[in-house]
Length: 497
Image (cartoon, rainbow, N blue to C red; front, top):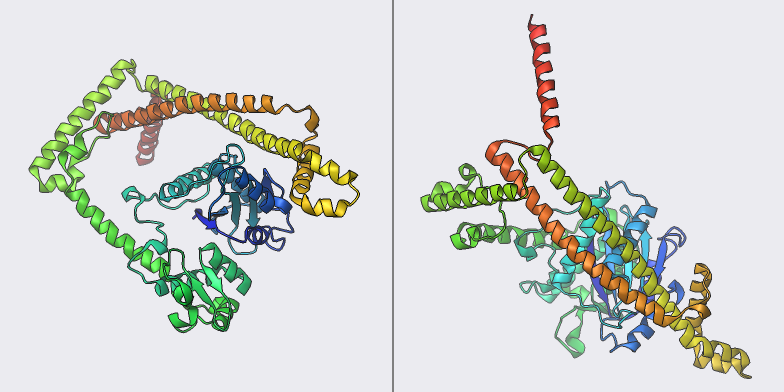
């Protein structure tokens, strides 16, 4: 199944970038893409962007991982394309980011590193539980559009699935460390990979006679701040971890995180079922929108409670009235009328979405152009001055970051075949503002239309349930089906004769 997860990078950004762009993992560097920065100087550019705002705090950058299922029919090139789309939608295109596709393991997966501060308004990116589910929704949408598998839809307001193990207060720090090590060993191809992956999980690492780890959120300080891995059980010393990585095929340690997650899921599902059985009538039946009809005969609670059954009957009557009012208000008297109306709304929605995607591409390109134009104009003096001064080597050392940013901007303009001297920043900002307003207006209309389409689907389903008429299909199709059925009966009669 296609999955996604986000982690924070609190140090060694250069090391993290070097890891994801590793030529051995990215087909010799062919599966690498950068936006708003150059791969070689991305850490420097991200740092300078952060300094223009209020700073980045402890979170230097974010690391997104997008994985695809083993049985998904996807090429590395296509995976990179989807990774770029994923990064653009998550960040809005206003953050420097790098996307790479790794093909060194059984399953193709993408790594995305993006700055914690955007380069347009220099605001910090906020990642919380809600954002994690927003990211997953984006990934699911992309994968479904490309016929790739996704995980089953999460339930219970997304409170229990895909929950970070470190937030499970029932587990001690040693148990959490054990779970993390078991998980990372299965993914690491070397001990260095293992150490990097543990850092990506949020652990601080101390090397010495015995390797030790400090978990994210762990409150201890001083000598006791780190947990020696040898203290959590057999198979967790540095030598044993190295051996387990080298002999992964013989790895017999159970994946404790999956077991724990499954147990929590079962407990939560049982709890949810109890809540569902005791929910109030007012909470179920009060709604202004058109709901779906309920099959009372198949409703267990209705069989157990006469009052609940009567409430469902009243709810169904109310739903039918709303459904009929909808059909009357829009003058939809035949299935063909309904189908034409639904298709018209869907076509209108598609046009809105196409226009929004076009604006998103323009805004993405424009934001990148603004960023490199600013870097070019701001750092041009330092670059040309380095050519004039007598002690150029000393000057270059003092203004190294400015010169690097200027050169990366030159590369961008050369690739785009643009002359930066002819670009007016004020005009670019005005254009960006205008396109942003236009996109917001289209998005508002698109959301409203999406709600209408969902209502149309509910009306169609209610008519089908109540009258047995499929309002999603034309009368011509029904006539053709009747004709085919008649021909089939004639052939059966001929055979019998």
